[in-house]
Length: 113
Image (tube, rainbow, N blue to C red; front, side, top):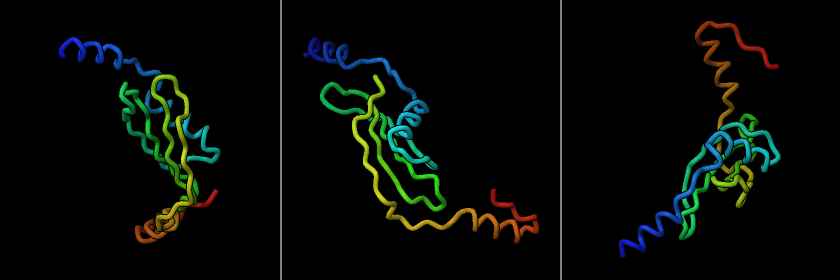
């Protein structure tokens, strides 16, 4: 039993080829839209415990129009799968909220670029 576990550990142990930032860049290239907020989580898949980055990304609009989940292989950087959908969440516009806070604080309002 111990020999089998040792063999499995040697076979499953791999060096990462992608860090979190590189995985976020790979996901944004795959999506085809400008990414705003994003989050990365490292998980493992399969019996060989292959490391996989799970990237949750929102489009850069305010509020975001699209959201996506992209699975990136953490060893070779290939895209395993990508899901994109319209954002079903209700968001408030943060730029309008910030303008209101600036007015309340007596600060000059920021200009839209």
